[in-house]
Amino acid sequence: MPSLKYSKLVLGSLSLIITAILIGGCKVDFEIKSTDPKEEKLLNSRAMKDERSAKFLSVNPKEENYLTFTSGTKGYKMLFYKDAIVNNFYEIHDSIFENVTVTFKYKPDNLLIYQESTYYDSEHLGANVDYLVETMKENLKGAKIKRFEDDEKEYYTGRVFKYDEKIPYNKFYAIIHSKKYKAKSVEFYGYGSCSEVDKTCNAKDERIEKHFDKIIKSFKF
Image 1 (cartoon, rainbow, N blue to C red):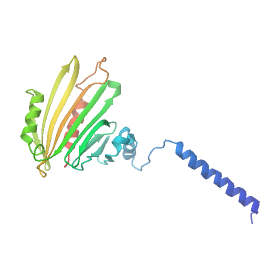
Image 2: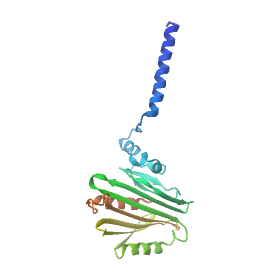
Image 3: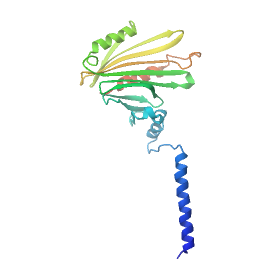
Image 4: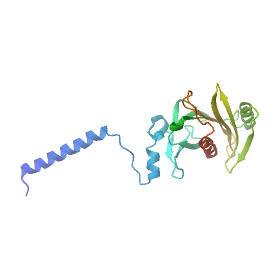
């Protein structure tokens, strides 16, 4: 049988080890572990590590490099790029209005992606699709408007490429309207441009259009 002195020594050592683990654990910036490598990548993405953004986000196991954003109004969901963050300006009014802006960069290529979604759940604006589309047409200034629909929504999209003060902007517009909830619509605007305006960039990079197409098609009410 172990001596009393030996037992006290073992208990004392275990106590020190546990204390060291607890103290050390507070200082270590650990990664969230998952059995699925894709899920682990998303859980440890820039978006999920940003406190403001993470409260809206959840892992979407069907999408690579994209999370699911759930509106603060609970009125809609959309995909959200893993390296994007929700900007400081965020506005919400009960369950009837939300404005959220999102940005991220393709740093090696000096590209900045900006997107803004404005959600309406009202008879005045959300249900007035014609007005929202006309407003979009004014912003596009004659560019072609395309209409699409699926089982859940109808949506109108347009695109324009232009230079503002010699800086290229690849701009995308969309109106997304719920077919089930007639008062719900989203006014969407986004662009790709140079992150550092004194340096060149390819604002026609195909990743920009692919990203915005993916986001626009992903809205669910």
